[in-house]
Amino acid sequence: MATYEDLGVKPFINGVGTVTTEGGSLMAPEVLDAMRSAASAFVDVPDLNEKAAAYLARRIGVEAVHISCGAASGVQLSAAACLTGADKDRVRALPRTEGWKNEFVISLVDSHSYIHQGIEVCGGTLVRVGTKEAVTTQDMLNGINDRTAAIVFFLGTQTWEQLSEVCKGAVERGTPVIVDAAAQLPPRSNLTEILGLGASLVVFSGGKGVCGPQSAGLVLGKKTLVEAVRMNASPSSAIGRGMKVGKEEILAIVTALDRFLDGSDEADRARWDAQSRTIVEAVAGAPGVKGVVMAEGQQAAPAFAPRAYVEFEDDALGETARDLMRRLREGTPSIHVRRTKLGFLVDPMTLQVGEERVIAERLREELQAG
Image (tube, rainbow, N blue to C red; front, side):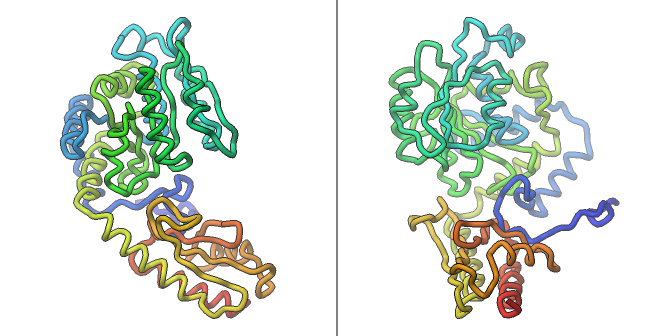
């Protein structure tokens, strides 16, 4: 069996969070078991995909679900669905959309250019609104015209309050709203509440908070639109054919979501808060360094999970935050943390039990050595 070490790749403790380039999240043993089980037999993949999706829809309590190969592909397939509907001729015609409703209102506040590119690959024309710093509800609604296929909304970068306003205005105009909520689990309520605001399709990553495979995602929404998503997706001979979801990922995401739904937001928060406090306590008393746990509702806090912030005064200890981050990366075990304006943060969502103590000890050692 090949290992990371065989390939010269160094594993690390992930304090950055569920970021794709850092490996997302880790799968639980039962999720890995589901992948192995799926790999042991041949099945009709379209049948498996439809039945797994129907199971997830019942389990979550929504009208319909499609399992995509990730959140980015889920947004792209959602755009394709808004272009084609259930029209087989249109599905075959993509990316040729001349004469159709093919415009997508999308804000500039989110930096993920691949979402913009994915929609354009499908034949969509982007109506970009706002600036990189801000976008208003009126900016988005003013972009709607008789050629609009959908609005694309980035939840997290944009607020819940604005989502409610955009959905209300879009529904009044008969315009679908696609919500990119890739990293917005937990809380578990987001699985149903976003659709409850009037969104047409909502996309989540399967490899972030759900702790499923990196190559899995969920598209939730209205049955007619989700069916159009499926028609455009692999294994159909359609624009999404290259976005393949294997039988292994399908069983794994079902297992991961079952496990996720059996958990609780309160237990998650309590664990992450305790881990964050262990890290913050490690820097207490170090000159020029301040540790703080940021929780939901506080300024600069994340949407859900408590995080440990380590902040530095200028030139504290003759050591910049960047240098300390480098030393953490280069040490054994390697530790990755996320740079902030005043220092760095540690996101406990991706910490395994006990890794917070390893980080705390390393921080004490590095600060004392500095």
